Image 1: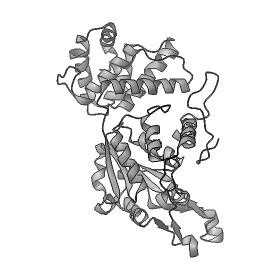
Image 2 (image 1 turned 60 degrees about the vertical axis):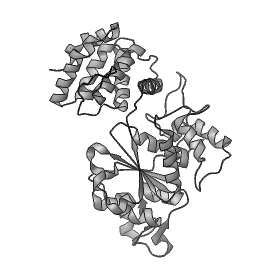
Image 3 (image 1 turned 30 degrees about the horizontal axis):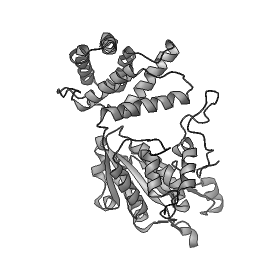
Length: 376
């Protein structure tokens, strides 16, 4: 089976004898079979250009029946996002780093359009040409402006095909580049003044819309012009509040990553308990017992917790043949949590002394005993 992006669909799970074709498959490939089942069973009305109805997309993302949950967030947020994408407004997902903004935009695009790879990566170097279209300069010099010489951007292709385009970190782009979207989002057309006739105007096909993400730590969302803000509906994603939900998500994601790499071990639950607890307390500045503590200035998100748990399991498997131990978490925390911030390093050491050292259980004591592995 071929996805609308041209990728062969893969099964969600792989047997130990199978090798993954891609290191990081897009969602429409990773969940290809699940999406195909949902499309086959979906009898509800669909917005123009959509591959699934809104209830089916919600079921795919939040989990229901055979569909596994892929993200932890409020159902109301998903429903509001779906209604926005079916309307004439674009969607802007805002939140702290690691709150799964990009994952949610990918899942929405995969379920609605069957393609999540039409993506623009925003940065200070992003130009308006990269957002709209460019030119094959060899053809341009040889035959002048022509449809054959035009190089379509992901946004151009999304308008042609009636699909969703993703704009990652839109607020990292200069304001004048952001405002290049104004007429596209308002009039649903893109002008190509270099081409004459019908080729000079691209009208968006049904199903086209835009999902953007913005990082609140960059404070860049305030740089959007008022005119551009009016063309977006804003939805804020927050860190996972419930410990059990975060624990289960970290365990499931680590299991998926290890299965992809054909690593036949999982981190013990005791190791994941330490990891998730430490990350939550350093992120919130509040212990599980309600006692106040110190917060790190760096990102201590669920996504970072998954990455550390994955590293712990790889370290244990390839160096010792096990699934990781509490002391391995200490090795990873310096690079994942403290990074190069000296103050955060001090906070981490104080946390080890004043909180971890007082916890009961052999796994917590093993974690505390490894505190010497933190760099001075």
